[in-house]
Length: 594
Image (cartoon, rainbow, N blue to C red; front, side, top):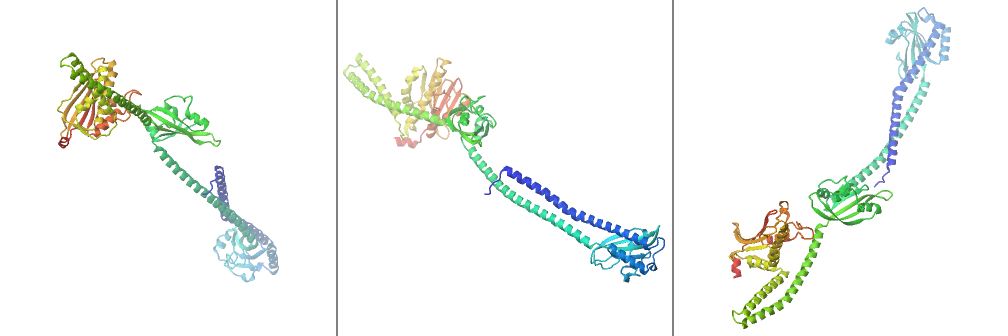
């Protein structure tokens, strides 16, 4: 690629070009002026001077040899006069001399063979007869005014001889201007040649300058085009980022941002202070990371939290680094990339919570195993006491109560062990009443402790459903847990009559039959503006640290995977209904089970 020249050199070339154009214009104008003005003017000057000389010679001859009142005749020129006239011709360097009568007859000529001829030309009788001098330049090898072949460049001059208003005759004087014209032509040719050389030299210089500048301009255009394409490509790449990207100047003004930044904050951030956009502050913080990057010239990174136009909070991990520097190496702009780590943090918290739950599950399983052995011993001992005591006796009743309580403890331990197992069992035909009963064995004590009135109405004749038991139990436990939270949260408003109702029924959608379970609580309800978001992953209406936002999302996915439906009905401050529909299996499923 050609080497680019500096702006100063470009200016000099443009100045030189302008100077050359001016001089070329002057040289061209001089050439034109030389041809069309100077040459004709000098020619006219030669004619005038020669004409004046001819007039003076003619007057001298007329005064010396001719009367002023009588017409000229051949007899007026004797031999002595002719000799004197010839001397005058030689003295004044005349090429030829003629004397005409008023009728145009040549009565004397330096060339005797012309004597007696007549000049019948129009100019003789119309111009000379009026007393006017007539002169013209005739070139060599052309004809004179009288049609004679000329052997030199001459000024042919006719001087009338007048007596008052009477035309007596005329003198025709031929002045040889060959030498003067040759010198004049040489001078004119030399000046024209010099001007032509100057013109062509200037043209060549302009051509060289134009070629050089054209190459430079072509190279510059190519570089500008490549730079523009590179900028468009880079801008396209940056704008396609899912991260927020901004460029900030030393005054902390945002001078560039990608589209996602403007979309998140609901406004174009260009020209605004970065701390106004990302931190909603009117002044930079005492430890602004961008200012620190400007001061140190090194990259910095950390975590911040900001709020978007829709009120959503987002955890961001930023990386700030120098984008451009001045000639002295001082940072002039900083590029900052903000990456959304909200989901990552929630997943990390959920992983920690899952690990904690897994640990708790393992601990519960270990405790359950430890409890299971002694409780079996208690049940066996109670059974022995029943066998050894009489029916209806006091000891028999106590033994029955011990046996019943031990059996309940054993059932709770079995459910706890079953729920703690992480299994991917195959779907099986089960009753929703049995699934719900197993869940309530784990939560009923907490429900009673919260002073919540639990009502369960599930008919025995409801068909079985084909489900993964542990998954559906997880859904039931999550819904019951949310209901308890809503009732306890609303206890400051409604202190008694806290109710959870669970109702089961068979519904027909004209396409398929479903077993419907409706979970009702008269707690705080769900605000209408978040009703369509409650199943979104990581969305939670609970305060930070009290919920992960995954419970309803996972529950909705589980029900959907089973071919069912999960709907919500709620009025804020009044009630919430969670409606679950599970499809009833075909008859073939029941036959297979049998």
